[in-house]
Image 1 (cartoon, rainbow, N blue to C red):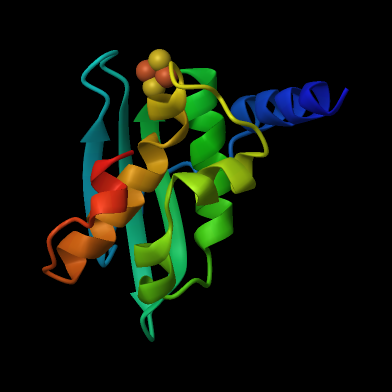
Image 2 (cartoon, protein in one colour; image 1 turned 90 degrees about the horizontal axis):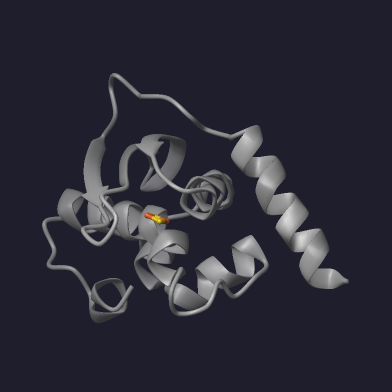
Length: 134
Ligand code: FES
């Protein structure tokens, strides 16, 4: 079944994470936490010509949050700040390939919240409504 393929892919990303680590000369970094469970994620972004040149994350969380962080950080490489600003819950679902359901939505969107929060902070803009809803 398709869901099994996506679940397997998720486990593979969790066990073999992409983009784990820290960028010492990041343009911006941001720490995000799910208050309901205490899981944490810090995102490091380095920009060049207003695009993501490098992205890394450190975190401690459940399989969905960490696998999603791997996939979402892969996805945003080369994206412009304006493109990231427009990303939302739908973008996360598309990238991870599953709808985790309302109970695990905060897990799947933890990294995107951190990424968008970092971009908005970098640009000295307030968070948009789609980020606040995640
Ligand atoms: Fe905390 Fe998933 S249970 S992020």
